[in-house]
Length: 311
Image (cartoon, rainbow, N blue to C red; front, top):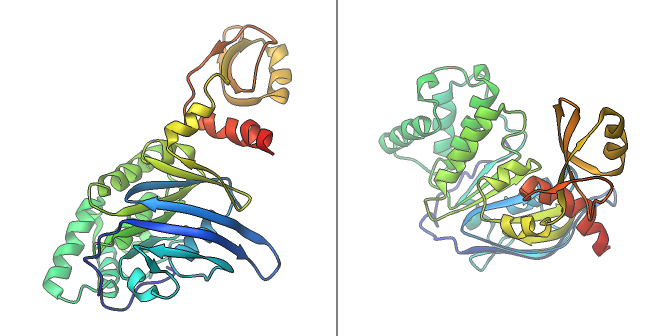
């Protein structure tokens, strides 16, 4: 685990209004510019940060949780400068890093109890109650005495979100939380995060898995090569792909030609060949039917067509 706030929650009752990111740039010592003049506002609710691997998502997450100082720019949380008020901001922050780690010798309950202590829960009776309630909420109460390193992959991720949520944070940041999970665990994890938005808080979900965003977030940003290339609702991104998603039937002989020339979203074997969905600016080579786009269609179209046309 990367950090636990070890100070008292002096601002625990703070209601988060927004996070404002202004002209944020991060340049590593080797000269790699991981972020380039990012300007972004994040309000309460579930916020999705989408982009391919290497887009700069993890760098932005590390800056937001005060593990890294930006080369340039400014971040404010409710008007508080992040760099000048790190202790206050950390006190309302929960974090699940992509590389989540724990103490192998501790049981599930002991690890979460340790996390609760570090998050500021000093009263043992209240802490025990909150730890049990959190284990119940993430579906780990029945394995509370099992060693944390003996949990399944999905259970470990649920333990990770439990430690991020313990202590009632007002900002929760999760980095690639569903990578490597099976479909059932991925859905369970997304549902758990969605339920948390019933509280007044900000949850930032950083991922390269499009379905994680489409099923949970009302607002999102898209990073590519360290730059902010889209900010808006998933529906607004989907609208950009309307009229550019086609479904067609191809023979085995036609399959390779279409696959090489167009961005193929899906292929399903059929009696006479294949049913394919592609995204393209236009398609007139053979009969095809327009399909209503989803976020995955829109993401591929935007990255491969709309964004390149802007350039």
